[in-house]
Structure formats: C-alpha cells, structure tokens
Amino acid sequence: MRPKAERHGIDLSLDRAVAARCLMRVAQVARVLLNLIDNAIRHTPAGGSVIVRAVVHPGAVQIQVNDAGPGLSAATQAIRPRPAVTRSSPRGRDDGGLVIARTIVEAHGGRLWAGAAARGASVRF
Image (tube, rainbow, N blue to C red; front, side, top):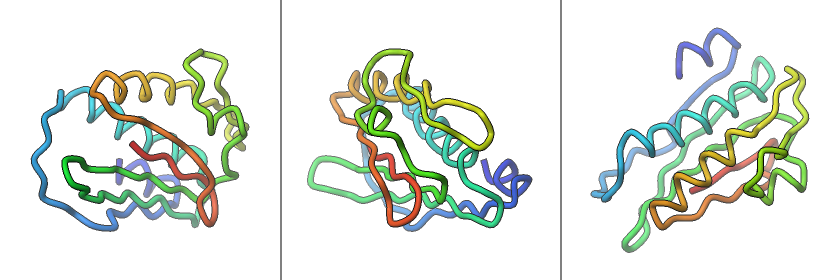
C-alpha cells in the first residue's frame, strides 16, 4: 500500500511492530487490513498521513488504522451490516467495504469499530 500512498502524497507509517502469535485465516485478515488502509488513503488529502498501529493485549492483538481525512459519519461509525453504509469523500467513494471487513473480523470472533481520531477517522479491529 506504500506505493499507492506515495502516489497520493500521503505518508503511510507503522507506529509499532509487534510480535504476537494469532490464530487466523491470514488471507481474510490481510483483506481486512488492506481494505482499511486503502479506505484511509482514499480519504486522506495529499500531505496527510495514515498510521497503522498494532497493540498486544492478553490473548489478543488490536490493529488500528488512523487517517487524516474528513472523519466518519455517525452511520459509518456504527458500521451497520448492510450495503448502505457510506462516508462522504472528496474523491466521491463510499466505505461499503467496512461491512465486509466487519463480517470477516466477526467471523474470527473479533470486533470492528470506528470513530473519530484527533484528526480524521480511526478504525480498529
């Protein structure tokens, strides 16, 4: 995703690498992470940044993707499981992919939630 971020003039960084063992379907969880990073890049203006964080908790790892975009609507923050989930975007796209991400995360016994960051949006799973 770094080349895509660079093409859009966005700094993509990993706040902290962690070593943890997790039982998961790697391809599906990778799809969630790529989806969240792609959404963050699409909604962050040039000169902004997207930060990916990983935090180890007892028995779990939490991944957080923060962007510097316009933030999330209340409907998107709830991430309702229906295709009507949208987020206004200066690039004219929606975040329906969050529904797919939520479905994958929940199939792994996890939870996905979204909210406001200090600037922009924050999505975690």
